[in-house]
Image 1: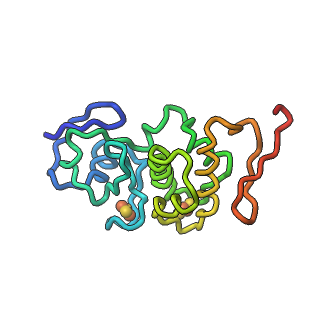
Image 2: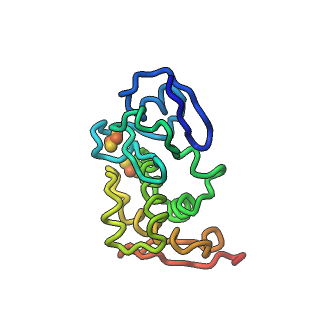
Length: 173
Ligand code: FES
Ligand code: FES
């Protein structure tokens, strides 16, 4: 039996120690927000945090997570109000959505380390693949999330063709 701490809660799982953490999250614990894409640590769909670091859970043995704090998309915020989630919503980042929980976790980890990332920082950190090609909006949303508390929800945010965030006040703002 392995004891895990996920999203601040303790879980006991009876699995092989080498089972990938992703399998445990999805199949044993029913946390299906973390997605399976490639299974070989390439696409990032399965990204979670382990002690605040982004990890590709498809290639991370569950035994390595024992004694660590695991965070999944289900635990990022109670109600979708983490600044990254708010920015994602404000800019309509997702298309099919499949890659987006991994993208959001990768972005949240980046912003923890670098609260005001440059485009180069974003390019270095955001290696997750999106087959819908939402990369421009992801970059814009990370910049928007970096503007802590400024305007998300009180203005309409749009992305220009150049990928810049354009703000338009709402009627209430
Ligand atoms: S499913 Fe883990 S990196 Fe693709
Ligand atoms: S939104 Fe479809 S794969 Fe990224």
